[in-house]
Image (cartoon, rainbow, N blue to C red; front, top):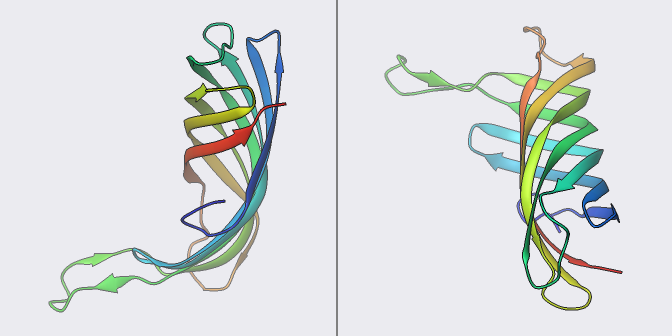
Length: 158
């Protein structure tokens, strides 16, 4: 469960030779009134390739690094804010729907405390390129975006 966006995230990982992992994830979410952003809705898939630093072992922290590639369909609505003096402003007026391709690097740690229970934390840093943009305002089309991920997962190991 994505705690901030209050929507499901589902991931399945297959490991190979106790050193490599291939993960497929589906994520979706909706955030309202967070910071200067009035509305954000997203949905997409992610493919993550992992290389564990050592053989995966139970009851040990298993560090890994890797790369990811995925898509994300987004709706973004935000309004520029100006302070009472009219001098300072932040944010931008945005109202668009778009698809995006995102890619980047990832690193993290997984821990298997028993037979089947799994804990994992990871972060990913990358970039996303928009395509098929439907801009609902007469302003500059959005370019790409900085893609940041922070995942804390509880799972079941088969």
